[in-house]
Structure formats: C-alpha cells, structure tokens
Length: 224
Image 1 (cartoon, one colour):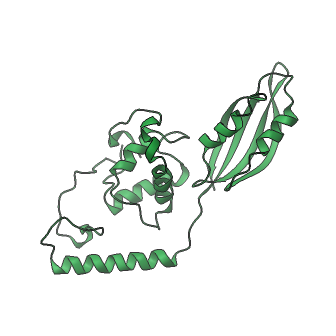
Image 2 (image 1 turned 90 degrees about the vertical axis):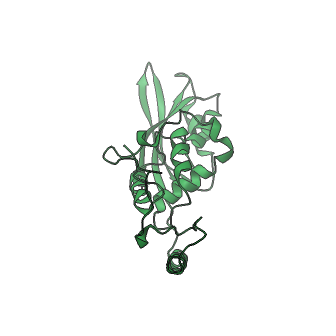
Image 3 (image 1 turned 180 degrees about the horizontal axis):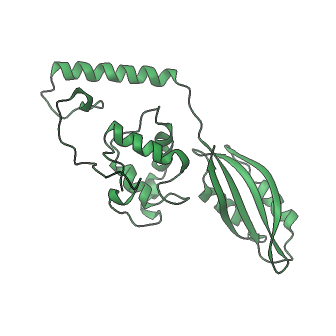
C-alpha cells in the first residue's frame, strides 16, 4: 500500500485519484491517517489536482487540533491504494529535468539552466492556476437520525435537524423508516461542499438536540 513518492507529481496524482470518491484517507472523519499523509507532503498540491488540494486545505484547518484527532498514526505504507508502494523520501537525486524542485532548492550551486527552467515552470503554473475556474467539491450524504423512543415527536426532530443552516449545506428529501418496537428513525438527504461542511460537524450539531436525538449515523456518502 502507499501513494508512491508524495513529494513528486506522480505521487500527488495517485493521492488525487484516491481521494476522488473519499473525503478522508480513512473513514468519514479526519484522523491520524490524514495527519500522517498530510505531513509527508512538501507543499500544497497544484490546482489541477483539485481532490488532493481540497483534502489538503481541509486537513490543514485541523492543524491546532491534530494531536486530538482519533486513531494511531502509522507508516505511510499502511495507507492508500493496495497496488501502489510507498516510496516517499526514498527517491534519489536525478539529473532529469523533470525532477527539478519547482518550489526551490537547497543547492547553493544550482545551475543557470535548472534555475531558468524552474522559473519558467513556476510562471506557467501560476498562469494556468489563474485561468482555471475553481472547482467546488461536493458530496451527497444520507443520514440516519435515531430518536430516544417511540414517544419522540419525529416532526419536531426533523424540524430541529433542518434548522441547522450553514454555508455549504443544503437539506433534501426525508422519510421515516421503522426500526422496531414502534420506533422510527429519520432518514434525511443533504448535499454539502466538502471544504465547508463535514460529517463530524453535522453529527455535533444534530446530536446537540439531545431531547429528541439519540444518535446520528452516515447511511450513505457519495461524491458528486
């Protein structure tokens, strides 16, 4: 398992493809798995790798809370596609122009040719980034919201859930689904902008209505 070399363009492409249908490296909430991969990346992914860039910016917002995120940080070879080997940090220096560090070099004797090529590529990257429209990554989420018992006012419970109004969140259709013993759960659809709304925030807001809500689960999660 792995992403190849996360300090290379090829490694970032593998990460971008991996995150095309995922919000996080593992599970539905940020964890130490995200921190392990985040810390292995030298700089923000380029704008054309928008899945990786969206994830990078989202995990960066947890910088002050990263120590408190769940899970145990493991080696990079424990994450990512099963058919890719982790080589981050193992790559050796190459004379191939494609391996020139676009973000700067510690070599005090950088050749004029390498310096010129690096500046040209940086200029091309900035030009491409400025012309490309921003892509808003969205996800469709189906939530199961469970009441305490069969006497819970489900209309009021749904009203509480829909009262949560934040930028990047749109509520959709809903229905009551029997779970047994006369108890029904609320199953409700929503669409979120990944950079603005996460499942952890939704759970925190919904379960705050503790007079009506016992728990919240993610029944389905799909990228749009």
